[in-house]
Image (cartoon, rainbow, N blue to C red):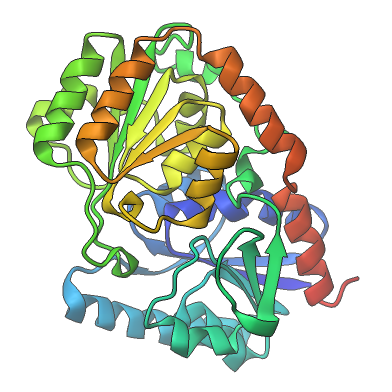
Length: 347
């Protein structure tokens, strides 16, 4: 089987890395295309995954349109030459149309249960839309629902075991109390008008946590000078090892909040997505498993931070909550592997 993976964001590398390794080990032909956005390329190289970089992130609407056009032409040409059986990736028009124009099955993964204007011109051409069971949307006959959080593709214990020795190489003692903060830019097209922590609240959170332990900050944007001393000391491909041993995660990021929760780390998420109708995966993590706390009001988020930090007996309780998720949810990578082989005509 020939499989083409179009990976244009760091989270996509994590999502597909294990199934890519499994496919390669099974003798299948895999081609990866990438986008130079944040640490996407760094992750691929750290994992030893060969790839073809199609474009780099551009700013502004005109820049995005130009980049998208360039990506489309390049990906179609590559796909036609490679002649894949399947094209897999997060849902996006470029990947879907490249699959259609090369005769491949478009297997797309959707990680949020809201639709954008692009959905109308993309979804009808998808062969399989891989979505969590709990999503409150109807995508018709292409739906492939799985009772799982997609982040389990790389955080399920069958595929990931946190290693404290990797942290020690960067001067981090996993037994000491530390906190991981994640601040994002909210500039993607699907973020449309949403926002995270204000600059003032970021300072307040850092000041509070700095008195209780070591603070590490990871950010999509350049860190402000005042936060430089808290810069994440480990390379991007070790972030989940750091998260796994953290005493608390705080951020306005969508993905990393889920990752922290699934690793059994108390997680607080605050952004305007949580103000009103929140996304189904966050609701389930909070209401069903009590692993995540989401707030549209940053002041309420800060109050929760102080209440959790005041407790030093959280880990055993959170480990039990995490284990329940592992017991009840599907192993995403194994499930993906079966699906790809089926759609690729192998089984």
